[in-house]
Amino acid sequence: MAGYSYTWANKKRQVLETYEIIRQEMPLLLGMIGTGEAATSTKVEWMEDSIGPRRFKPTGNSSGSLTVTAEEVAMVKVGSLVMAHGGPELFKVDSASGTTMTVSLVAANGGSRNASNAPANVPWTIVADPEKEGSSAGDGPIHQASMAYNYTQIFRKDVTLSRSAIQTAVYGNLDNQINHQVSLKLEEMVRDMNGVLVFGHRQERSGSALGMAGGLYEFATGEGALSVDGGGTSIFDDIIINDAIQQIAGAGGEGKAVLTCPAQARVFGATSRDQVQILREDRVRGNYVAQVVNALNGSLLTIVADPLMNIVPDQAWVIDPEMIRIRHMQPPTDSDSTENGFDGIRRSLIAETTFEFNNAKLRACQIKGLMGAEEAIAKLRGGKLVQITSSEEAPVFTKAVTE
Image 1 (cartoon, rainbow, N blue to C red):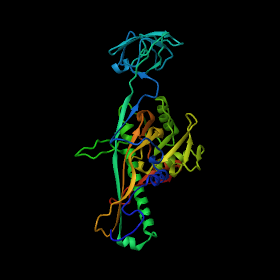
Image 2: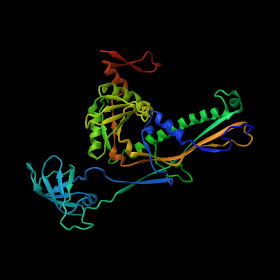
Image 3: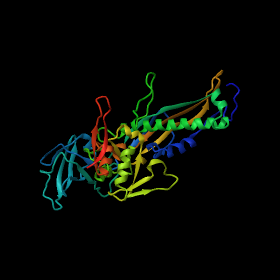
Image 4: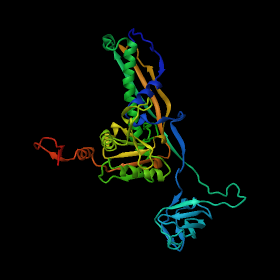
């Protein structure tokens, strides 16, 4: 370093506090989630379990003998009380082994179905598991919790101040210049982390592969995940939002936030303006200061207008943000990385982080196929969208016109 003196020369410092302030002030999903325990390995594991009613879905019924999977057989025991979707009848499990479960009618409860004509290919719910007097350990149904995992990802940003930049002293003394540049790079790091949080793909590091952390789309989509097809409906149709909330509630979770792009958030907020509450608390910042009263259960639903969702403007999510936790293996640090002979100053910001998604497929519901935000806004204005081209070379664009 060519004779430049400042407080943190040749030193490393923690910038976690500054990072926390920045991430909570930015209108991103990252700003809503909490921080969990420190990661102690590049592979972070956590226990998962069903948080909703126990259900199974027979593929056939032959005179009260239900065809199920071995995993579903393991959910019940002889004597378990079960009910088929669509009727009030209560049945009892008489036997369960292999891939077969036999049931008998216990109480019609005003219904007309019996064990022989009880439907297959619909969900059945396990209501209870009555126990005998003097039961002992192991008599109850056994359920083995599953395990999920994610990998850590390294985030790095470099700050460079050349001799000319230092001598210009636009931002005051050298300490102020460095702190200003570090804050800008921390903002970039926060946006990178948010991108991974939403769209990241889980990948184990090796000699030929970079370690990467999986995100919301990785953990909350696929087999067994909750989703709602918007069918071209506007997000301002709160039926769509409540459908998603109801799916999460049915799985035992609680939908507390809507994650969408700013334009869709504008539509949702405009049509729900009579229900919007604007918060003035220090702990709630950014573009998600608006909370809407949820029509399903009366609780508050936070609108998260994340610019990253502009990539998929026809999609949104209803989520429980408490299911996600930041797990730092190395919290953000700022260290002097100026090499000998460099005519200036270099500092490096480095963090190694991952995200825990607990029961994501039960606590997040994807909404797909929404009406475009432009069209929805046009409808709000009582107009429609028309396509205009001035020439073959000119780009196609749309505008709202009044009916």
